[in-house]
Structures are given as C-alpha cells and as structure tokens.
Length: 349
Image (cartoon, rainbow, N blue to C red; front, side, top):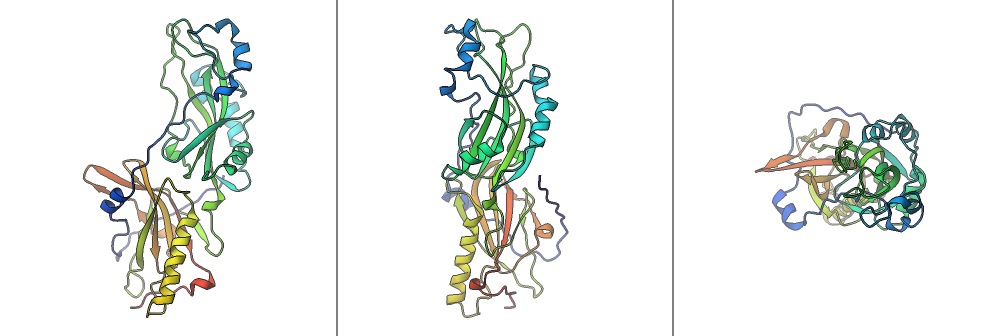
C-alpha cells in the first residue's frame, strides 16, 4: 500500500483566505444525498445455493437470503468475524489492480456517503474483479471490496438465529474512497442465545481509487493530507498568488482532470488577453472535496499562479460557519509544466 508523509509549518505572512465563499457554494450546489449501500447480496442469486442449504426453513416466515461464497471465520460469531486472522491476511495480501491505487486496508466497516453507484457480489475476494466492473461503469472512480457476515435466512418470528454466511461484495463510487468514510459497521444487532437478532458485520474492507486521480500528462501531482487544502503565504515578492476557485457538483464525474482543465483554460485565457504576459495565469491547482457537517458538497479547484509544496502548505483544515462545520478531504495538487501554458511565473506586480 502506498503511503504519503507530510509536515506542516507555522506561516508568518499568509495570503487572503483560500476557501470558497461558503454562502455561494451552498446556494449554487445542491447538497448530495449520503447513501449507505444495502446489506445482503443481489436478489437473482437466491434461487440457487441459499434455497437448497436452507430448505428446512423455506416457510414464508423464514425467507432465504443470498448464500455467500466467502470462507467462514475461525469462530462463527460477530466478534469472530471482524477479528478473523484469515480475513485480515486476505485483505492485507490484496494487490491494487492495474489502473488503481490502494487508499486503505482491513477496515472493519464499509464505505458510506455520497457518490454511491451500485454494488455487486463476487465469487472470490478479487480487487481485479471489482476493478473490471468499475471500468465498465460510467463515472465509476473507486470501489470498496469487503466480507459481509449475513444470515442464510432472514431472522425474525419463527426463524431464530439462522446460520451465517460470508458474502463478498464490491461497492462502487464516483468519488474517492478513504478510510474515514468506512463507517458502516453493520446493523448494530447484539446476538444473544435467547433472541432472534442476527448481527451483520464487516471485515477485510479495502478501498481502491482510479489512477485518474494521479498526475495528469504534463501536470505532475501529489496526494496531500486528506483533511487539509493548500493555504499559501504571500510569495517572495510579497504578492498573493491565489487566483480563484471553481466548483464541480459531486454528481459529475469526479476526477482530478476537472481541476487540471479549469486551470489550463484560465491560463490560456490569461496568456491570450492579459497585458502582463500571463503573470496571473494558473500554474498550480489544488483539488479537494469540501464537506459540510461531514457530507460532501462539491469538488473544489483552487488555482494559483505558482506552485506550492503540499507537504509544507497544506494547512487549511476548513472553518466553522454558525452551527455548520466545513472540512476538507482527499486533497490533490497538480503543477502546470506544459509548454502550451507558458512558463511558470512568479507574480511581481
């Protein structure tokens, strides 16, 4: 798994605030709906293994559910499932598929939030299988693979404590998946010998994100801390290099190239129309998701006229507005190195 280390420093001369006008953002971009993917598997699988294995409980009060193809844990209980060494080792050994990079491993919860597309049950724990399915979907940029503990039948009156099964699932997302959003830990049921609750839990949860969030051609890039954006100081000439921000709705195809394109278009316009030789052309852009009370609102592209080191200047953690808290996640930066955009310039006027 790739990892990234960053440091922060105190800044003496910081330029004007580089977050958006929050009132404009919340008025112009409808807040997307956060979604928790459903438990269980796809309905069309019911007609095979589960019905046969659970034939003795095929009464209406005990409907069959999907029979997963995953292994059983060493101890068949909710606690045994989430703490299974067998499951841990499987997730730890799973390599990123071609075209994707790993963002987290072995979480005990699945991804929930905005940008959910759909889910798929698979035969074996295979990130490659999830990636193939994601590649075939318009707007799919990330996926979460996991083991889910579920019952062979739906627990309830006349159906106490059904036998367990392990379902292997991929969930697919338009936005990058990060461990901070792997918060769906199950149905919260507590199993006791005297009740009919069945505890659904999650294990071996891994996240993978499309390489489209990596550097773009001619635009070297970096991943910055997931909870911070660039907060650039005045440059060596005492000038502010922050230009403007542009937003994209989460419903759009979320990708780093949205910001690269916006920066390139701004630079091209400046070189063609400005009288200062393009001194205020975009040469560097910071892409991130802006969250309001933990819910993603928009992809933000903050543009600058010169590059800034993410390891030093990613210190903008958001702000509070009344009872609302605005925070930042999944930051990326891209530096314009293409000849068509002109040389990287430092503002002196």
